[in-house]
Image (cartoon, rainbow, N blue to C red; front, side):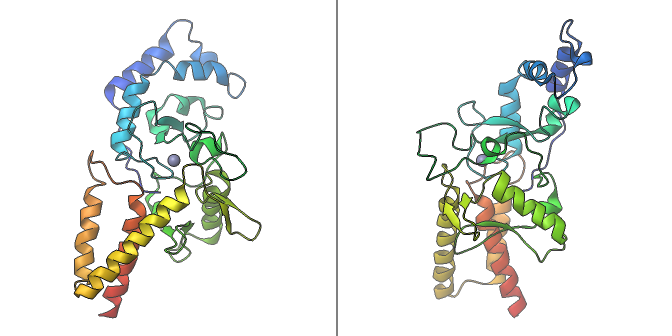
Length: 264
Ligand SMILES: [Zn+2]
């Protein structure tokens, strides 16, 4: 997961929402949630979805807001997620500031035996409320990855406080299923249908062999890594499109850089 800098609502989208609300017969004023959720969804469906997806795609550098899998902004792989569920917040239901671009979480594509994989992201979440929030920079700076397993975790050493840290980890594991399905001992039983854990492990392996290679060449220094980190961070600026799971590589580079810097 990565920090997402939310842009201001594009004028055209704001205008369309106003029109939808004011359309005679839209019934917006009289809607109460959760009982009128279906009616509210019909209004949401009147929004310019292609434009919304495209804005979210750019804002999120082509990555799912939860799992960092590629989204292209097309309907085929990009879903518009209500961070505050539509059935719980009428105002947020049509508000761009409440929208995230997310993947289908394995819901689309080949049917796989549900006994050996699970859905992730919005497909796993449904309407559950989340504590973890990609617009919260402090939270996102606390996200880490285990080099050996590719597992995503919330760091204990960055001062979030134990309650927040645990709530975020619960969202990662039990609500969004970003670590697949775990057994009662907390070990990963099986991966997500979109193979999130395996994909992140793959990046971890690639980073480890890079470190070895650079180390053998004698070029693995804090400054060398700082330069690499800046190049990755550049991909997360403006409307640039980043590599899938870029957060994993970035995290491992940063920890190594800190380690090297402490040594000197
Ligand atoms: Zn996803």
